[in-house]
Image (tube, rainbow over all chains, first blue to last red; front, top):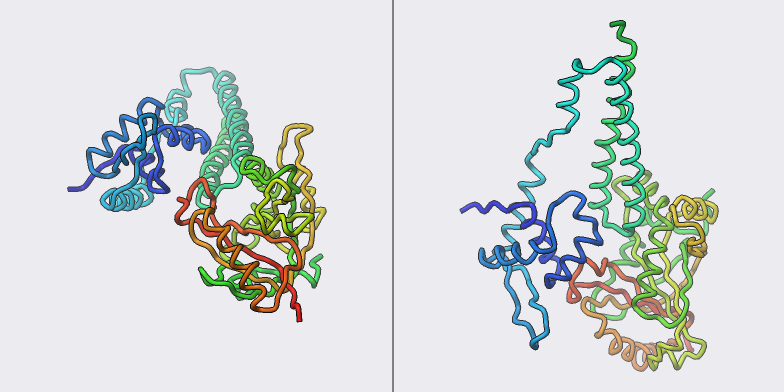
Length: 178
Length: 209
């Protein structure tokens, strides 16, 4: 039976696969690696998700040593298989994400020429600000492994593509005689 | 300008393997050539928290160089590991594990084209908060003849290996220490379980004969 994990499940399964960790530790790793920038996994849902993974036999909880000890989760052999399958699927298939830009451009004509141009110019500055922010985050997070550096290259590349598209479009819309 | 005395590890894969992929679980000899380093001196005893902070500061400082390295070298790019060098004014404190009396520094090998000026540019580019610039310095280090040991596992296995090195292996081979001992960490500890962590122990030596 093919398993379909949610983003939060796949994320936690991957972190537990690095080494056995308990819930609070997972929260800390998610926080330090800034994973909340691109996934939605709340602190309270970590335990819920771990419970689901445990039920599905993908992770196993070690018995806590002592009354105050925390429950540590480790990946099971089945969990590792599923992690590999899901990673291949995540890398291999394109999942479209839709930008607010699409709705904005579709309704361009409801605005005056100046209002539309101003709005697009504002987008240009917010894209530039985001590029600069990612750049700072990248440095704060050093050291990162090369596959995570590449992930940042991907995000920056997308933003640069958008910036260049905005510039081209602004030029065109400004030059348009009507 | 590339100094001829420096070894370009991206061109010399054999040396690269010898330096960072020795056989596991046994002492072996290695001749460490002159390499350029970014170095950050540690303060106080070598506790985990200040070492981790220094490692992070060093990685942040050389970020611009690592990024350029990735672009320039493409497929032949290799992430150099971080090294921590330990020494004591009195060698006996090192052997006895009196860590309170140890000195330490963290260092990472740089590409040959990254000279002292390039390192300073990289530090300036790192976007530290004002007044928070780490005192990273450039240095060329030639260790020469060394004994090394690749340990795979948690750090509590290290004292036994060191005991074997200083009390048995070196005397048997007619060798003695000749420079500070260091550990090279091949993994990011926040991502790799203790049982799988690879650490190279390296001790420069000279012959006693």
